[in-house]
Amino acid sequence: MRLATYRTGKSVILYDAHSVCDAESAPQIGPALFDPDAWRQRGRVVGEAPGRGASLFLSAGAEEWVLRHYRRGGMIARLSERRYVWTGLERTRAFREFQLTADLHAQGLPVPRPVAAGVTRHGLTYEAALITVRIPDARALADLLLADEADDELLQRVGATIRRFHDAGLDHVDLNARNLLVDRGGKVWMIDLDRCRVRKAGRWQQANLERLQRSLSRFCPQPESISHIIRTAYDNATVA
Image (cartoon, rainbow, N blue to C red):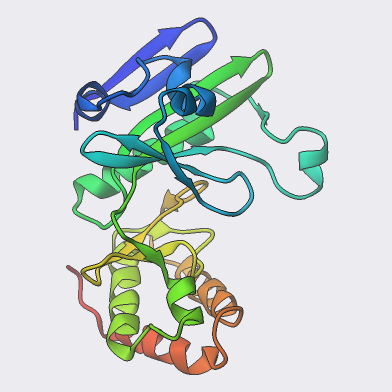
């Protein structure tokens, strides 16, 4: 990766120059890079992920990208769905997630490669968006569980993969069955690192696993047995 920064008006963009400059039919560096309409006008929106603040899948030549705008949830969203309090550029959610993802990617951990983070300041608030590379033919662990396609071997890889991230110090504050993807080769990936951080070992590791276990109960009839397989593989894994 070759990181670069672009500033125009109220917007600042942190991006991987290799990815953005080589992408075919992508808008030029600027706010349009994060504008869904700009991609639609080029006929480059190829799909959409469900959920709050739905992500768009974009065709960018040899690869596909995922565009996600940061949106609030809960009661606070009634006041402002997209605005966050400005406390400095490096503390914006987009820049922090981009940098964290880039650091983990550089360590060889299975996270999507970050492409660009965009921040637009509005006085005391800001809006932000993030673009990452889409993992080809990947499916969420949640969907595999619902389809009864998650065998013991896969669940063991899930546990071992989580252990790799924990050994690297990653506290994933929203570890759930939708933020774990499995590609066509069976490799397990971790996504959505918003608000996550690197920490020393502590109680947060157990809290991550407990959160995942609660998530499993939504997608399978026997979450305890599945959680046991994941946890056993996690405990038995060694540092990569």
